Length: 328
Image 1: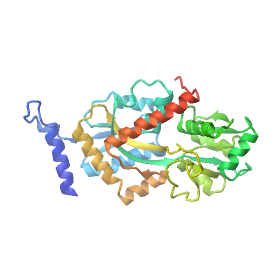
Image 2: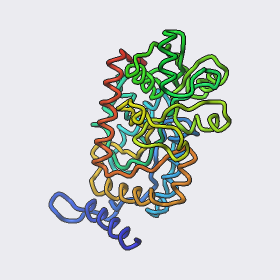
Image 3: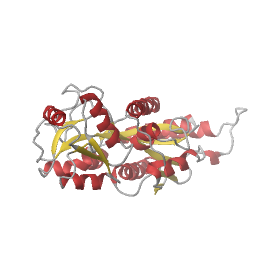
Image 4: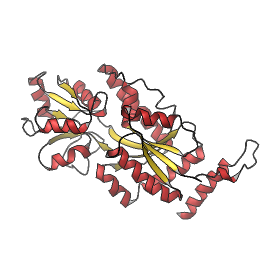
């Protein structure tokens, strides 16, 4: 393992120290030879921050170089994303790209950058499903019963979201189309207040990430009806997927990955991707990620790029169909 890592580092050194005429430039170009920073485009806490710090710690040890995390929040991830898009493509500024920055934001907002062309996908880290929950006071026990109840009471039920244009909003709008439901959207400033109000009975449904819902499900305060994703989640094995229940296309998850600025040199991308994918099979790291109900999703850079393109396309279709557009 150590020999393979040395060969990877040597390959990056050789590639980065070659001049256009084929001769070697200064060995100072070796990568990495100084501190790397990973931008977390959110406030401290939550899945994005957890992924940033977990990867920074372990990747830094693997590379033998310090990696620091900088939280640059604002604009639903736009502030941090713009900083990375404008950074030098030298491998020393990376970012945790996630479903918000490289999935739903491009679908509903006019951004000061191109979420695909201005970034280099490096490695997918992991994802967690969204889970449709209702309060126990609502007289439904299954997804089918919820659909029947909502159809019998058009416009009388409401659902919360973490805010307009977020995954919790778009996923529910997707379901409303598929199930032909008239349910009122109540947007909140973050998932915390949305959970508070569904617990208090102000709303009747919510489509949060599993990590946010799990404590309330385990306490019996929320009833789970279905999860997104291609298979059931190990933490809620009794909860069926939407696909099992006949609703196709609900395979999206709240995903997190590592990206860099556009035009990142291929040897650097390969080194970082290889090392991160090695980390994802480590039991200790998997246990750490499980704190946010995250399951590793190792991919090559090309696979990650396709995943992002498909995710943006999917949420763009939903946003257009539901006429959802956010003007900042």
